[in-house]
Length: 121
Image 1 (cartoon, rainbow, N blue to C red):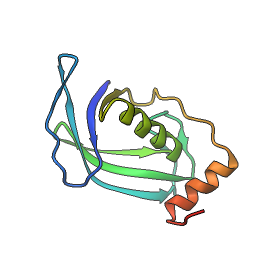
Image 2 (cartoon, rainbow, N blue to C red):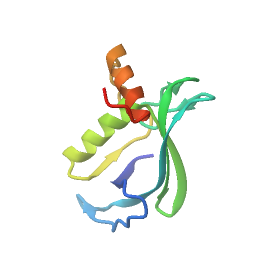
Image 3 (cartoon, rainbow, N blue to C red):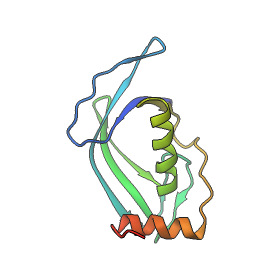
């Protein structure tokens, strides 16, 4: 399943469908987003790899084309997806579970955990 969407992170914001290369953009609206520590395994929507018990991740609820959905993201995968979205100017597409998970260094993991906890390093 290919997802064409405008990723609207502002809760409650409305996004009108805009054409991309002659196709209609599927709308996405974020309802809630929170950082969590996994109590059970999850699967990252970007790379398809496991989010292991004890790992930090982002859990997002949204409405995609009128359907409620939830997605879980590795912090590093979410960053890559956000950078890609910005490069496309806000409208972009991706196929779930087919993104590449970036390598995570120990230092990057510590910064990611600190960011989830609201701690500046």
